[in-house]
Image (cartoon, rainbow, N blue to C red; front, side):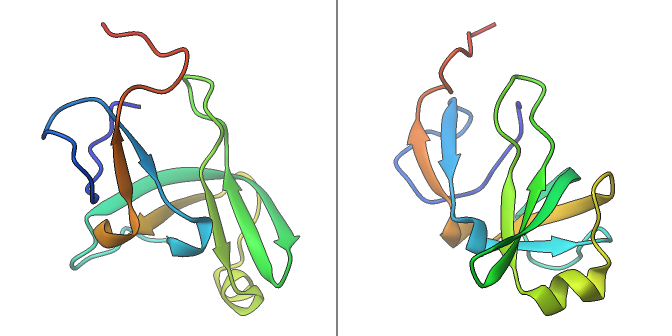
Length: 111
């Protein structure tokens, strides 16, 4: 993706890395959030489905073939935001919720 993500881990600044976080750590915003969030990723919604007691909001697959990002939110939040496939939203994740690991995603080449 070539996206700058802030997180916790032993990765040098600017080095290729894999960022991991739980879908429950993701907040969904319909407008660009202001304030302290470091990790704000624009997403086009592919699916909105029940996932246990939560609503799973999944973004479209990434251009590099990676699976779309996912957020687990409450049913009340999903209803308040009127989320539906094709809608553009912002996924927000606090830095402390992101684990960074050195490396590149499988199938991704340098260059």
